[in-house]
Image (tube, rainbow, N blue to C red; front, side):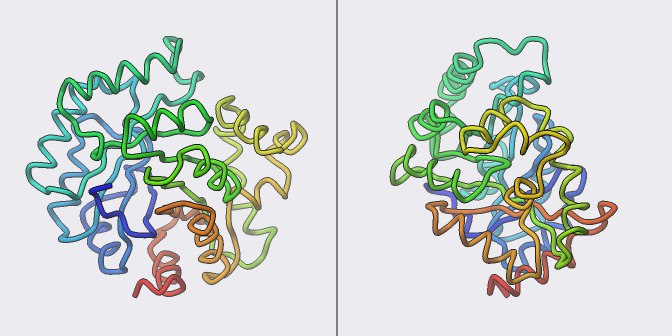
Amino acid sequence: MSIELGRYGIWRHAGGLDPEFAVEAEALGYGAIWIGGSPSGDLQLAEDMLAATERIAVATGIVNIWATPAEEAAASYHRIEAAHPGRFLLGVGIGHPEATSDYRRPYATIVDYLDRLDAAEVPVAGRALAALGPKVLALAGERTAGAHPYLTTPEHTRQAREQLGEGALLAPEQKVVLETDPERARAIGRPPVRKPYLGLRNYTSNLKRLGWTDADIADGGSDALIDALVAHGDAQAVAARLTEHLDAGADHVCAQVLTEGWTDPLPALRDLAKALDLV
């Protein structure tokens, strides 16, 4: 893996990111920013954040295969890599079947997309693949730098490392709420899990592979499921959950901070950085 992501990063939807956020994240000691929410194929946001900073890496989590042709993603990759060598990771993924009427033969579609990235000379070490199940995890290890699982648990990370073997990147996302009252934390964390993810079968199938039941998934998710998917507590407790992913075999874990009313996550990220000894 040629791109240094560090041990801890930040995952945030593109609409909540800008160069000023990147400068602050770098100053706090985070190793990478993951642009979520299927960013546009020109990836101008990634370039702008890299231009404003000196060290922090930027990754996409993820460029959607259905929305952005491989050739467009490749052109953006090469433009960014030329300007900021070794600091950009192109994360791509198939998304979920509910998002497009064209969703068919998903595995073959991913393979075709990676073939086209090969043809456009995007290096294996410069790209990663969204992956949850064993087949796509194996593909991530064979055809890309590694896997970027989303909406998972440390147990999934352990199983994913066994599937990937040593050497491949494993960079899961972990939702977090810095709130010590469990009921209030769940009230913040449940809505963005319930909608859309508990209605999308690629995510619910993955949860069932991990042993969660239909009853756990129903009605917005059981308290136990929400607690597993959204780490909560004080900064030390949340930091401990992130570290569980590393202990389970992750190389890097990116925290998605959820806040009440979608307020600024930087105060929580500052507290978390201190708990992680980043600053």
